[in-house]
Length: 252
Image 1 (spheres, rainbow, N blue to C red):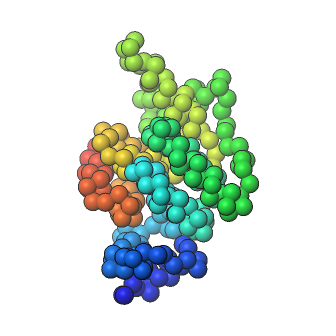
Image 2 (cartoon, one colour):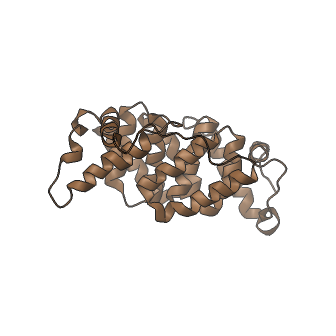
Image 3 (spheres, rainbow, N blue to C red):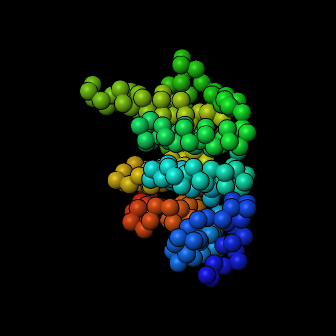
């Protein structure tokens, strides 16, 4: 087998002392996968990310594409590369707003399982900064901070039949999740971009969040780097769709 030395060392950093049984059952496949995902992609000039950002994006992407088995495998690796338990939990919590609890529930269970195996005491320290009384106002301010002043009265816009959903976007999506500590706005918008890109079929929302990312400092090249580093986990079609959305947002 011709797995590169870099890929071998990176794999050892992720999973110290572990040798996959796929090396026995699927050696040709693992040779190409490891060389691609753990060497070529990581070292591609112009789209490199620091390890912590890369793993945060990967975890969010695996949530988005429902890669539960790979997510559980990658959690210890993310911890080994400096992602904190709080950052992981905040990523899982925020995914509920974009994927729904029906899809996130198994990931929350898997996270708790891995944390307890790693000796991480649960529950973690609370990160909430809002109450049920002020969440709407705080959520609206967060929307304004990220998307601009045009979102100030968005919560009360729309017709009678659907206005409540715009309210929920303010008080629940942004007021309950984005206002929490543990991740900053740039990290939260990046993982949201990954959730949406990985699940596919939500290109209007993906374009809007690509633009929001750019507005708060996650520029076009950064988003291209994120998609590039996550491509092994979601494949080419969804990655190409995400690139198209980035380019569309950049033109605006």
